[in-house]
Length: 162
Image (cartoon, rainbow, N blue to C red; front, side, top):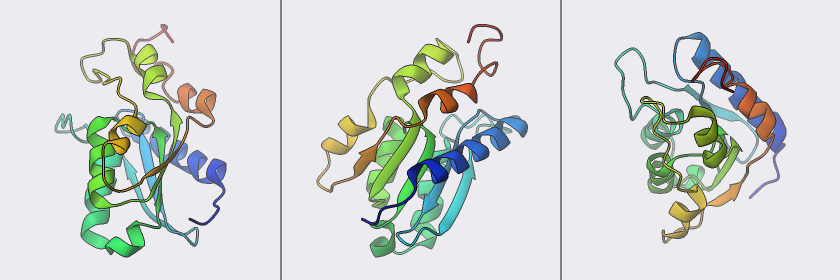
């Protein structure tokens, strides 16, 4: 896979997460970048307004990508996510055939930030573990810029507890 500026694109996913929070959603965002460095999709968390517990940014992005982008292109793409994809999102990324994941905030650190929040009962299962169970390889880079990624969540889950 081509070498991309992971920090640049990851920070763009952070911007999408901030935008999601500004729109009243949970602070998660994801972008899809092709091998040439073109941003193909940007997706915010989609929990609100319908309280869709499966409306994670990465899962929504994977669904859109599978409908719009050829499998051979997706294999060379990278999904940049403000936080580590949960088991559901990792499964979606795997099934769609995206070749690389780069994430900011680890699932373990997210769990420490959110605690036992009813809207984010964090599944402490690393995406690497999910991908390792598959037959196709998915490269994983992360956590990266984790403190910046964590800052997006301050005040979002338990006011004053972060």
